[in-house]
Length: 145
Length: 144
Image 1 (cartoon, helix red, strand yellow):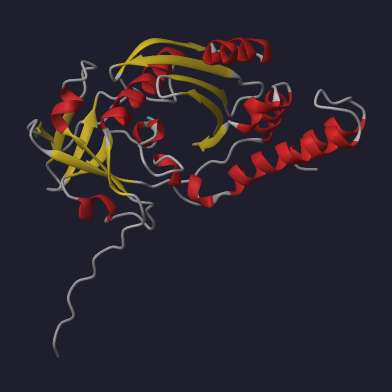
Image 2 (cartoon, rainbow over the protein chains, first blue to last red):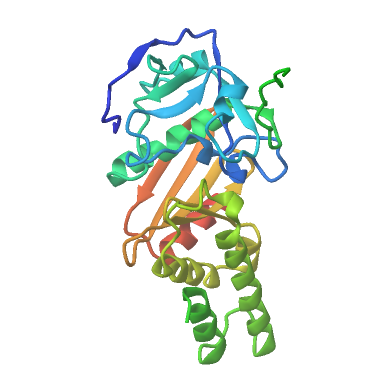
């Protein structure tokens, strides 16, 4: 698998947690916005050197994105129980950031790509929609002068 | 001339269309061209402005693949740019999928198919050296 970097990788996230991923493309959701598409769980090794990024809260999932088209969620237990060797781990440098590790990459060998497409389909089947439309970033409360 | 215009010019000039004669072929290709162009130009399908776009070669190969398919497969296709690759995706219910992928390398043409049951992929294969015939075979399987 293509997780080249292991710096800042923490403990395994417990199965009872739910984690969130911002829809950085409109087609993370079906056009009817009633299901999650496989592309939401595809990753390239050149862009995701330490794993696929998700977050422990919906707000954290959209924090670093200029735009989003909604938010999806998935249970950590369902990821671990897929039987694909995936692990959800904390990022020790960013408290609300987690990574799906051991996810195969789309940009390596054709064998790994086939596995990446299959695993992304299984993850998409398990994922649910948290928000089907763009979620604004919360702004900090105004400070009284 | 852009990649899309090349396909369009090629298919509307000398080559007889499979979709009909004369004007029918012209409008068919125009509709197909619009479909591909809409997806390629949809900024919401890209993660950022910096994301790699599909190459002209990928666009031409994908458009040629579509031209060789029956109208119902063209109508039902999902067109998906992803990190410089262009994918054409077809689905049957929720358990079968065929995905043709056209990458950055010239003549890159691969086809993946899968069948799922109970949330797991029970049958899949990625053919890295596919062609139009192979894609048609997999679409026949998809519809079977």
